Image 1 (cartoon, rainbow, N blue to C red):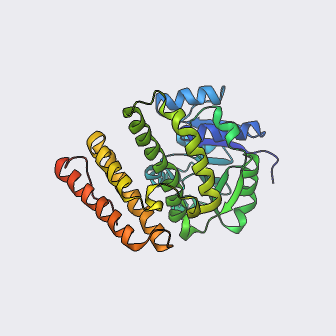
Image 2 (spheres, helix red, strand yellow):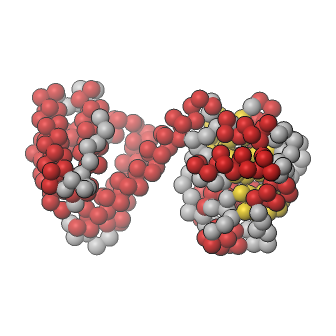
Length: 306
């Protein structure tokens, strides 16, 4: 195996520019990047000074390892275009960073002799130097054939990450777990900060930070056992008061409060922490509050999936 790779990046977004910068720090040669937006070009200039910006086909022709860090819905078209153009060659490594996709989407590249790897960093990116230190210990969800595993492990190691092998058939489930945990957490926290701001908090983030840090640490260590709050205590009147206040102050937040309340209730009734009679009372409150909100605000209230 070569001591270093010539690496090209198609998609100089938040992920691509950071991974390329980290690989360069590990000694690899970043030969070129492709990025169309002004933001991508600025990001490349900041994180990869001196690296030329080229067309995707030119980037592909110049490298041994091609990183495809484009949005999921664009990935198939990019692979097909590069394969059909003759920009890919036999023995070249084509590595994408999509969480949802595995190796199947790289089939056109493999058909012309390239070697495919799916390598998704389980981290959220800012697209700045801050991310470089965050890569240390980051889990990478990797799918690769046996022949490509050594290179996949080398790349993840050079990024200071840890490999988690994901079966092709489990890629979407893997990604759904990450998105549900991280992406929906952002929505939840943003709504909580809005509620606290409306309640008079000068700094909602500072108010929430110690509570959320503790809740996340406890949940990761203890799972459902870390649940606290009015639903797990069966406090019907507190839940009723919450619903009334949210409906009056932030009706667009009510559907998510109800959906998460119902999911929490299901778990604590099933494991016996809340008696069925109290669970039924709380569920009735949640259902009635949502129905009332839908009637009053049909454009914002939606029925949560059950």
